[in-house]
View 1 (cartoon, rainbow, N blue to C red):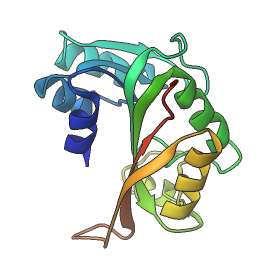
View 2: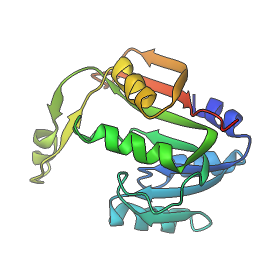
View 3: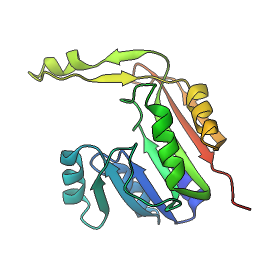
View 4: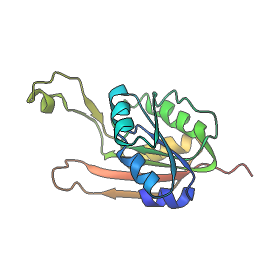
Length: 180
């Protein structure tokens, strides 16, 4: 599905929104895309800059992207919405749609399901006290959210959990309407 996004944008400019340490940014760049990454965590952005000094990364919230309207041919939200409560998801999708040019594409990957999973206990075994919740969405919920910001689903992949995974995984490729 990531390769489908790459094909759809044809080597265009892609925003890796919620880029973490830049692993997917590198994947996109190595396949001909011009990539910019943003992440809320300054520490992750610093790691991305060290590991991928040829790419551009910035600290930013997904609800307040520091880019002009229509700046990107595509946006990748690769497991970037999993810590987003349902009431904040429409704002993120709206902001992402704002920065995608007419006819551009959006690819969203996430754990599929319903409810909230508290991940704090897994980290407490390593001595870390954190609040960490993962929100699960169905593919239909994410697709409906994309539709509400004007996007149209083009492809969907939902697969069963594998190995240590406990949730289904889903990926949705969508396109925003053209201006013509």
